[in-house]
View 1: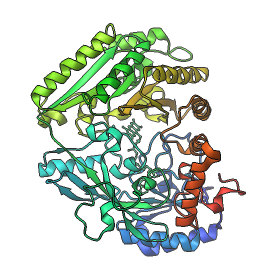
View 2 (view 1 turned 45 degrees about the horizontal axis):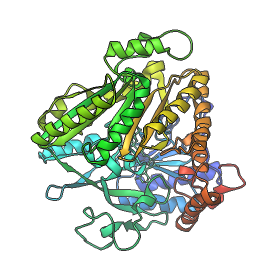
View 3 (view 1 turned 135 degrees about the vertical axis):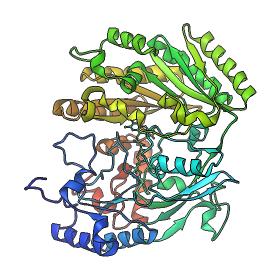
View 4 (view 1 turned 45 degrees about the vertical axis):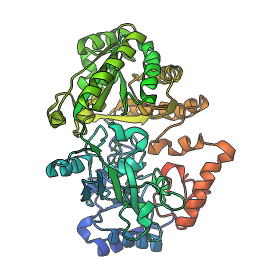
Length: 534
Ligand SMILES: Cc1cc2nc3c(=O)[nH]c(=O)nc-3n(C[C@H](O)[C@H](O)[C@H](O)COP(=O)(O)OP(=O)(O)OC[C@H]3O[C@@H](n4cnc5c(N)ncnc54)[C@H](O)[C@@H]3O)c2cc1C
């Protein structure tokens, strides 16, 4: 803790006004649920920044436990013009973690609102508070012995609500086209409590069963936005199948990504594969399963020879696809034969294999990917950020969307790889097909957070990638705090008609601009122009 530390103050108020607001929050929540020390606040920075960076530091953290407390927080914030920043677990690593876009904002951390409120075994859904983690919901389902599976993200410590609101990807069948979410409760900036869909009718039992309602469906407006604080959400659960069959595909050449994607599209469009496969290059799997120094210690980016040695040594392909079937036994056999034939005929040297399991065995499977696709959460996948820096490793997720064609896969790969090579960084890629017609190419720009020069090069190349990818028609599906404005700038049709639409909603719902200013490039009127925050 440094002697010279001063609390960051958000734009528009003085340090004394901020202190008074923090006291008002403490009167409402109790001092133990208002974190204000430098040491506490360090835990709420982006963990993947360089140590010296303080661009996105908060001035305090609030830990409410009830909806009423959240309503009191927005009342105080309105009275005192204090910008808030909401997260669920705040594990948005690769995109800014728990940190706010505007320095000096007060974080509303919903970590303590972590109750699973309901599991409906008749209709197959759960209702959760916003701090519930994948670990928590999975355990609640298993403890009851409920015969359902949850579609999860790679890391179990994230919040179900936070990940969903960020358009985050999950991998089981309900991960396709973001099927899982149904019905929300939201605190608006003026403290109003609204329920979406059928929940807008008092006591309606179809709130978490039917995704629309009467009139416009606002759920999507609360995702990647700053229009409200979500306090409850319905999550659909999938019945456990007779057979769970995790599958693997490897291809031997880098350009095989094109026929791989073209073959996969056909199998996804006709419903043979109905989940979210992830296609990883050798380096991504290498980063999960080992570390860089084992394969290469020379200068510059890792060489072709070293990548070849790694593919051989780890027995992985130049591209490896993890995917799975969830079926009746006989259907699994039929689909497996069809899938194997399709890939092995289309791509010389391709290999497809897998083993059928009783869903009860999923938590005991050895490979973390086979557990993740079976809905059993862990933190095993986190290893990849240690590629350069071990414990000090960090990454930025640069994640453009493209149509699901082989041509696009090659074009995106070539752009990412060449631009990263220019700044001496390895090309580490995971491609997820979030729908049968599109993929997100998550470029893991990994660096050592203790190496200031490498961190600077990583951030610099990412901001240039935002622009260069957009020129070719590839826009980001989710943006890091550092590039949120730049990424949103690329969505410029009709002289930024989409951004102006969002800003008009923002100004109407949140005239004082207290909720997460700057989230996804949406700024309230008072911070939009003039004072340089945007
Ligand atoms: C190794 C690794 C693997 C990863 N794998 C995946 C993956 O498989 N899929 C994936 O999607 N991501 C992945 N990520 C990115 C990220 O770690 C996860 O998405 C993580 O779950 C996000 O953290 P969270 O769920 O705690 O969200 P939070 O940080 O809590 O929330 C994310 C954002 O949503 C908004 N928000 C959250 N809660 C609320 C609320 N109640 N009301 C209003 N707004 C809110 C805020 O803007 C917030 O910044 C990965 C990252 C790493 C490092």
